[in-house]
Every structure is written in structure tokens, then in C-alpha cells.
Image 1 (cartoon, rainbow, N blue to C red):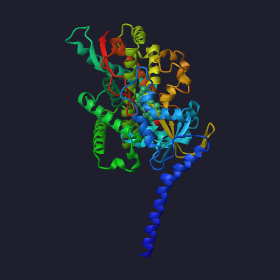
Image 2 (image 1 turned 60 degrees about the horizontal axis):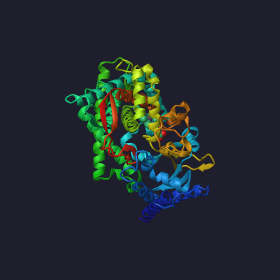
Image 3 (image 1 turned 90 degrees about the vertical axis):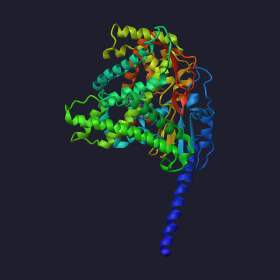
Image 4 (image 1 turned 180 degrees about the horizontal axis):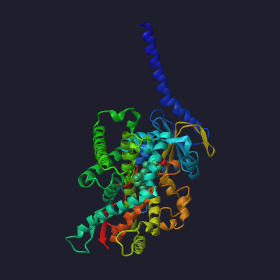
Length: 517
Ligand code: HEM
């Protein structure tokens, strides 16, 4: 009996020491390590870290922007902007027990993402926040497993497939144009129509990614009503992921498994999206077994080839995770860019005209663009880059240090999360000049501008966005098709408020007045 008591006592003492180490000693030791190197930050607070300050700073964002040219960084990353202002280009703070180093120095960020990438992994904090949305797909895989998955998926984003997707993009955009044209069916040609474009762009990109992933032969699965429900579920999942960033719930291990109303809703949404994807993939498998031609022309088909090939190492459950990752990663980001492109063009009519002139010249008499002429859409490309600069859909990235090493003069220790505030780089006066807040696509006339170390809308290094070429092609096709058919101006109901739950989405949507060209 005595020995059992001793064992229990030793276990309890061990557990308390472990807890003390994790919650207090480890973050305290890391904080001291960085402070000794002259890196400052808000005061160290055990257990909760700087959640109080972070929450207070994010809650100060007013409901509406002060002007149409107010920089989005003030609304999307006010806490990081404030730490940068108070403590300089490199500062330290904690979220709960996680130590974070905020780096607003382009060369250091490049080291983390590119040259010293092997010392880092994706950060636990973002994995915890986004796992329901992105599954265990490529975005959060690591090491050899990540490399293997990336090798399987990469061909799907190469030129040969992109040509197939180009058709898919054209078809989906044509459907959207026809849908909008019908709004004039019973009314006068010159009548203005108000359209909430942020929702329309989300539906469009969801349609495109479903067609590219699963083929156009979906039997209407992700169109119409199911598409709208899927969109609602995805946006609900995104909101709860982003809301959890600075939530106290983070301090409770296993919170996401408790039977709360929010968790119940989140699981319902997740179940719907998983069910939809499973049904589509199973119908694809059945089709594949009956009509096997070996030449798949969508991404799930290509992954199924990898599942069935003897040499392959992709399991069916991994295929589900990858499909989920691409389904989400492939639609939300591009929808944001398209929404802000149309908004900025509505605010800057001369650029809208210049872009339309270019589109009309490149299309000529054709109703579809020739894939070989995509490169001629130079002005559209410049507008796209300037939009990605002002409204980057991924406003911050983070990495977790795995091994001791140096970046610049800083000695890094494992378990430190590095925060790379893309949005602060993109809107830095030091990098872009005093007029960094203005929409000036001519910045990108010089091709080298997009290779500047401070411009990273698609990330960088080995983990650079897999869908970058897909997204650029999609945005060019959609913009050119819309500009060719319609003109845009701001609705009197438009309220400028970029930033919804730490993302670049517009808080109140974007109602635009649309006219037929
Ligand atoms: C304008 C649209 C897009 C933007 C701005 C964007 C941005 C990014 C960024 C910044 C990353 C790197 C994140 C990090 O390093 O932590 C990333 C990764 C990724 N993106 Fe995109 N993305 C876009 C569109 C797409 C599309 C259309 C797809 C797929 C169809 C896609 C699939 C992925 C995947 C799979 C990764 C993870 C790559 C890896 O870790 O190896 N993205 N994206």
C-alpha cells in the first residue's frame, strides 16, 4: 500500500514539475534569452502571456476605416503594428505559454523562409487554429512526408494541367457573366445593378476550384444550393479558426473537444464539408473503375492515380486531407484578391479604363482568351500585384524554430515561434516610399518590384504557395472577363472596412454598381 502511495505521490509531483516547466520556466527562459540580446517586448506574464495586450489592441479597431486609403495593416494587424512601433523591428511576446518573435526586417524574414528554412516547421499555433479547415494536408505536413506529398501534387500545378484548368476557369467565368447578364433581362440596358461582389467572387472561386479538383462532371454537386451551403460552412470554419487566435480558450488544453455550442456548430460544419468531399471522391472512384483511361484531367484524378499505382505511397485517407486543403486554400485567398481588385478599380476609374482597353485589345473579336496571350495582360498583372500588396490574403505567416541557429545576429532557440507580418512589409514606407498607402500599379511596371524581399504574397522558399500560378491565371481570367463585359463603381452603400477576424475579408461585403459595357 505504502509503495503505491509513493508511486502516486511521485507521479503527482512529476506532473506538477512538468506543468511548472511548460507553463512558466520554459517561456521565462526563452524570454530572458532574447532580452539578453537586446530584444524587447511587453512585460512577461506567466500562464496567459500577453493575451491581454494583444486582445486590447485588436479590439481598438473601429468598425469602419477612416478613409478609402487607410492602410489595411492598421485594421488587420494593429497589435503587430503597435509592437513594431514600441519595440522595433524585432520584438518578443508570448501567446499563452508560446514565445513569439515578431520580425519586421525583410532580410531576416527571408532567412527564416528561404535560406534557413530547414531549421523551421509550420507553427503549432496556426496548426491548432486551422486544422479543422485544412485537415492534415500539405499546408501543415512536415519533413519527408511533406516532401512526398508535395512531389505528388506538384505536377497538378504544372503547365500541362494549368492549360486544362484555363478552360475550366473560362467556363466558370462565362457562367458568372451569363448569370449577371440575366439581371438586365427584364430591364433597360442602362439600368445600374448593385451586386455584392465579395460573395459572388467566393462562389466563383469555389466553383473553379471544385471543377479543377474534381472535374466538371460533378452533376451539380457543388453548384447552386450545395455550393452556397459549402461556402457558408467554410466561412464559418474560417471565422472560428481566426477568432481563436487570441482567445483565452487556447489556455485550456482540449477545449475544442468540450461539448460547447460553438464546438457543436463547428463540428456540424466540418461534417458537412467532409461529407461533401467524401461523396464526390467516392463517385470519382466508382467512375474511375468503370471508365479507366489512365489520363486524368483533374487534381483528384491525378491523386487517385497516385493512390492506385503500385509504387505510390498516397493513402485514400491522405487524399481526403489533401482534397480538403486544396478545396479551402484554393478558393478563399483568390476570392479575396478578386474582391479587392474590383473594389480598387471602382475607386480608381482611370486604371479600370486602362485595364479594359488592354483586355479588349488582347481579346480582339474573340469571346475567350487564348491561353498563349495571357502574358500580354501586363496592366491586369500590375493591378493584381498592387492589390496583393495592399490587401495580401495571407496577412501574416509563422514558423516554429526546431533547432538552435542564428538569423542575422540573433541566436534562435527551439520552440520559438517567428511571426512574419507580410502586411507590414507590404505597406512599409521604408520599402515602398511615402506613398505606400496609395494604389499605384505602376510600381510593378518594373518586373523586379515583385522580386523585392519585402513582397511575399505567396510566401517564399520551399513552402511557397503551391497554387501560385493557378491563382494568378484564375485572377487574370476572371478579371479580364468581368472588365470586358461590365464596368464597376462603388455603391453609395459601400462601407470601407477591410479586415474580418484577422483576415483580409471586407467586414460588410462590397456592394458595387455594375453596368454593362
Ligand atoms: C491569391 C491567391 C493565393 C494566395 C495569396 C496564397 C498564399 C499562400 C501563402 C502565403 C502560402 C504560404 C504559407 C506559409 O508559408 O505559411 C500558401 C501556401 C499554400 N497554398 Fe496558396 N495562396 C493562394 C492561392 C492558392 C491556390 C489557388 C491553391 C490551390 C489550388 C493554393 C494552395 C496552397 C498550398 C497547398 C499551400 C501549402 C504549400 C506547402 O506548404 O508546401 N493556394 N499560399
